[in-house]
Amino acid sequence: MSSSLRIIVTGLIAQHPRLGGVAWDYLNVALGLRRLGHDVFYLEDSGEWPYLLDGVPGADWTAYDFSENVETLACLMDRFGLGGRWAYRCPLGPSWYGVSEAERKRLLDSAELLIDVSGTLERPGEYRRVPRMVYLDTDPVFTQIDLANGKPGVRDRVDVYDVHFSVGERIGEAGPATGHRWRPTKHPIVISEWGTRKTPRRCFTTVMAWTSYRPLLHNGCRYGQKDLELRRLLELPARVGVEFEIALARTAHVRWETESAALPAAVEEILTLHPEWKPQQLLEHFGWRVRDAAEVVRDVERYRDFIWSSRAEWSVAKNGYVRGRSGWFSGRSACYLAAGRPVVVQDTGLDSVLPVGRGVVTFPNLEEAIAGVREVNSDYERHARAAREIAFEYFDSDKVLTRLLSEAMS
Image 1 (cartoon, helix red, strand yellow):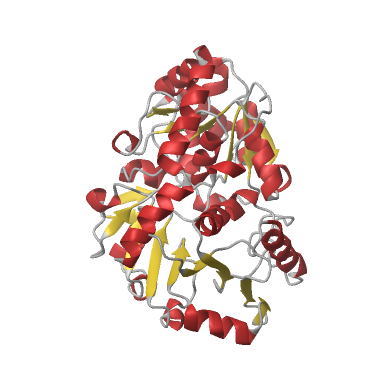
Image 2 (cartoon, rainbow, N blue to C red):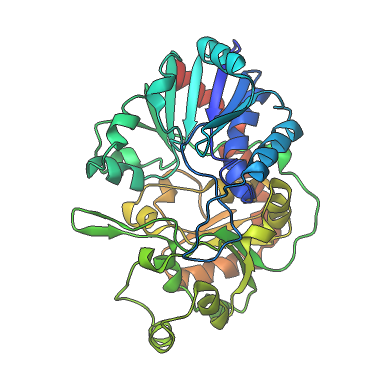
């Protein structure tokens, strides 16, 4: 697309002021569009209350003093050349921050495209004056289950949009059926932000939440979170003799965990002996190094430094992504690739959407996870080169967003 468009990109940066990876999810879209020459504004109107990450489970995590949230967003927008080109509504007011009300109205009257990343808008119908609206699904399987199960309000929101994309590239064939055409896309990564000559440490790392929300039930099957998949693979460090480090989010909800009847005997024994253990205790018992994500990756710079410092990524996927065979690949893993760091990740049906075997190594079970780690270590430089090549070929924001815009505006 040759002509410049005025585009609104939505997100959740201010709601999550200490989650650098979350900020990159939205920044890569906004910055990538600006690189293509478009007139880009960032807007956050999710209706979600801002929250703190310093609380304890069971406590009120709401950031009633949300000045840090607004300041973090403002500084980030300035840092990346979007100063004066953002708006944030805090529902505690409700109050708007960023551009003036008059400027915001002019923006909505003149914008040609709105890209709602992650479906973050609380009331997308209020933005219907924008001629073209895109829903970019970043939580495949779970989004479609909510639609198929008739979760109140979800269909009314999703149906507002003109075009629907999903980073679960196989969701259109894998289902569940929702009555929408889910166009495949990938997380766009601004590759120039990720190049480094830093020497990595020896450990495989990742950033994750134990649980993000409750498991969903659809057609008699339960679709769970990462806790279920990781419990099956807890013995990995002892089996492969490699350092593994997890930057773990503090928010772990026992009531959101999914029980499994197929755990290794050693894991079952520990869970029986210590049912009170928190995820960190369980992981550390099996040899994983655990760090507090709220400190390690609390902003975009530290998040990037953490990836740069890693030899490679090793990570599970949400059980729902694995069970749903959606072809999901995380934006986080794409950032590892852009930094020239190989990834060893759980298979979600990736073989039809990415080249796997070099740079991206997938596994379905513990034995193949062990083999994948050993394969990367046995020829690290080759895998590191392949990682960067895959990032350029498949995740470069110039390519991903050019295709997305072509489809969105046609």
